[in-house]
Image (cartoon, rainbow, N blue to C red; front, side, top):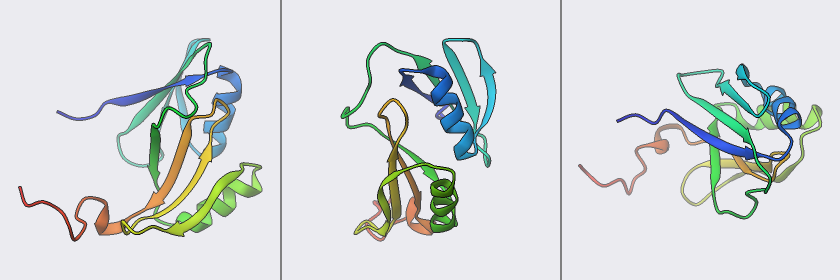
Length: 125
């Protein structure tokens, strides 16, 4: 199996579309209550759908990987995006920064290098 996509709730679909386009994602489907984006690299896509309630504090975090994390965060801040966590090195060997989308979904931008799938504590399978 392969993961196809993640769909996030959006309180204001147009505001969310602008947010994700500002982050650098390509809008590939738009139908009024639904939008789908391609990531700039790889084959991954994700979508948003109109919802009446925010998913804030759901515990779900969407991770997007970027090799030059600090520069990307700086670029996005210059575009007006506000991070509640600046880039920092985490004990699990990832460098992470976090922000919320307009609907309160938690987004983590990170870089993990080889530790993404092969941390020192990886289980041999």
